[in-house]
Image (cartoon, rainbow, N blue to C red; front, side):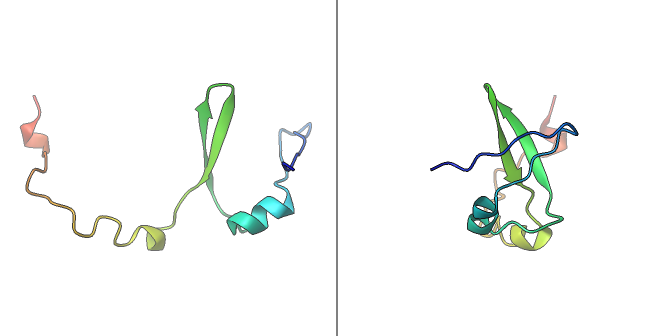
Length: 70
């Protein structure tokens, strides 16, 4: 069964505990909201530690620099 919550008069939403626990979300964590049709995607902003090594092994031979632009 989906978790349901209500938008408060201050335009705040409490994320149900079952969702927070499943996603391992913590208080103070930042999120980005991306409009998607009639809904919205809420995605946690990754920390710098989580991004470390994300481009490991990337081929920079075909890297487009600012000098390559018109």
